[in-house]
Length: 331
Image (cartoon, rainbow, N blue to C red; front, top):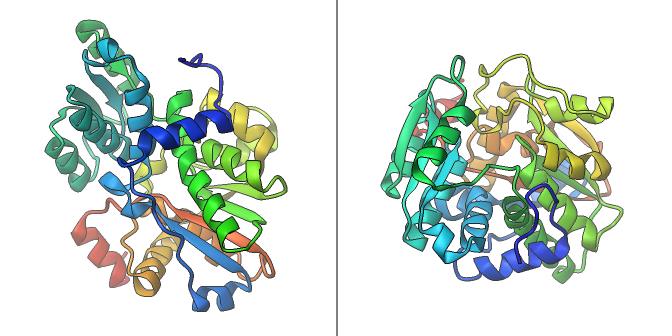
């Protein structure tokens, strides 16, 4: 049964998404570090979605939304707009389902994201992030082709797919005999944050969930304080390209406004430091936007001492040369 597009999913839809993704998505592990626990005073569980198919959590929502379409509708193809991670997720979902995909991507997207999107067989249409409207471009392609638009977060099936990340984490934390006090989630439009909040609070109702964003693009943080959606003044200018949404989604904010404890923001330099920690301590490759939740944990010092904390690394699609510069502390 197809849910209305303006109705957020519940735990049932997230469990249905988990069934669709079984055998398709990777069940990423929860990682621990004695050093990180000692540094923070908390019991930290790190969920590395940088190990997910296509290198980020985005595959979960893209595949769930695409596979939920009736087969006769799906064969017209998929259209998406994204700076790279959702693009790769939709492109790979289309490849696996045997349908065409067209992705609208900013011309300044990291080269590795453009290349990997093409590798999955998608057609890429680039645009100027500062001067062109990607949604209008995507709408024109949909009108001309009859293909199905998969929004990166304003889609209940996408949110449900992203929520499987939180569902897995909750199940694994229960299996470890622990409770959950706090959740830190990398946040752009808010789909992952909403899905993870729904899933984790189903099992741990008192868990405090925080959005984490780049400084200057902390629209969720400011919107939560104001009680209404607020936008960002700039469209670009942070290394955390995966998280540069203009404002929280209407659908995602309808979930996050009632579930999140607060929003946090970190600088690019703090994200780079977290990338180094992820690599040195866990041997993980995290992109800047994918490392902001870990950056917030590190910046908090011992503020969460005594708690059990779930921290997501949402993606690892970073250009190798840029990553090398970060590791050498030249960024």
